[in-house]
Image (cartoon, rainbow, N blue to C red):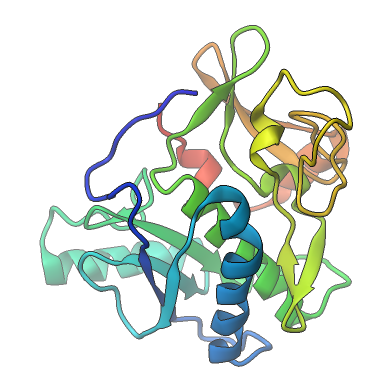
Length: 250
């Protein structure tokens, strides 16, 4: 695994995550109830597996020294918000930049209008909660958006813990939350069905990508998305601007 250290992160500390709703459309769920469910998702499911505790707090603006999860309409709105922050804090502000940092701290973004525009049989509230839990889990496991695991000849797999299993979900406080892979998923020496590879026990071997999932992979310095033909077509139609996997560092 290739690690790159980024300033501002203290190994072993429990981060506070400022949860901010700047979407102009309804989420389909009370925001405080959503944050409560996400906290339980971390406490009861993610943290016991990955060792990634966090304290989520509902607030209205980013705070110094605090991680951020922001609900915002679209990537375009995020870029505009970045410009507004630059006016306020100065040209050195890194917000929604290449490494998803704001003033040296990690950021998770949920594009509400984009999520709600996707064709799905799920309710609006479940689409939002799945997207939020997906981004939250991946930020907690790889806050610097810079961890890679070598597998196969010349292949580096990104430590994105939800992408490969993103179509699967389970309920927390009545809201759908994203499935996620376990550390064994990135351990190529594991035998098929030898251990638990994901939370819902749908993955049978290391680095397996489910039919509706994908994986960011670096090969010969080029970032590619490994997925089924159907999923690749969906990804090409999707607005992936400012998505974590588009800004993998290293």
